[in-house]
Image (cartoon, rainbow, N blue to C red):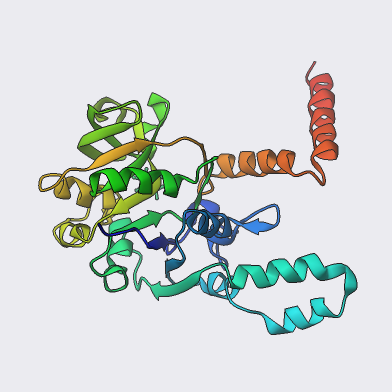
Length: 296
Ligand code: G1P
C-alpha cells in the first residue's frame, strides 16, 4: 500500500478579495494575530505525519519562502536579548518544521492547473492537497482524518462539510451515495453551482487526497468557472474511471479567503489565547454593551 507522505499547498492566487492588503503580500501570509495562515496549514500537515511539503507559489509570494527559511540576522538579534528567548525558539522552529519545497505557477490559471505543477514532485505517490487559505481546527487533524479514509479505500478522498443552501454557489459541491455516517461514494461534482443545480449542500472543504491519476484528468479538463481549470471538474472526469469518496470533516473550518470569516477567525482565536482572552472578552462585551446603548 502506498502511504501518503507528501502535501501540496497551492498558494499562487492573486488574493483579489483582500486587496489592497494583498497587493504586495500573499493572502496566505495574512496573520491570525501573530501567526500567518499558511503556518497553521503546514502545522496540520506535520501533525498528520507529513514532512514533505510542496508549496505552489507565484508572483509576489517570496514572503512565504522567507517565512519558512532561516533568518540569521534576526536570530542573532534575538539571541542578544534575554527576554526574547521564546521568540528565538519559535523563529527557529518554523524553519525546521518540515522539508518545504517551492515551485512557481507561471500564470494564474485555476486550482486544477496549480495542482498540475506538482506532478514531478509527487511522482507515482498519493498526496494531500491543502488549500493555503483554509484553517481547520479539530482534535484529529483533518489531513489525518482523510489519510485514515484513504488507507481504507486507496482512492481519491475529498473533505466536505455541510453548508447552508444559500452558500452552495461559493463552493465545489458533491453528491452521491452514503456509505456511513461520514463517508459517501461521490457520483456528482460541480464547481460553484447555482442553488437550483446543486446536487446537495455538501461543500468541498479545502483538503483532498489525490492519486497520480488526477494529472491525466487535469490534462483533459477544459476551462470552467471563472475561465480557469478547476480541480472539481478534473475530479468529475476522474470519477468516470475510478471511485471517489468524500469524508465529512470533524472540525471547524475557517475560510481566510473571505473577509467576514477572516475577522471571525481572529476573534475566535483571540478568545482562545490565554495571555489576553480575559481582557479581550471584557473588551468585546464592553463594545457590544455600549453599542446597544447607542442603538436604543
Ligand atoms: C476552492 C475550490 C472549491 C472549494 C473551495 C473551498 O474554491 O475550487 O471547490 O469548495 O476552494 O474553500 P475558491 O475558494 O478558491 O474559489
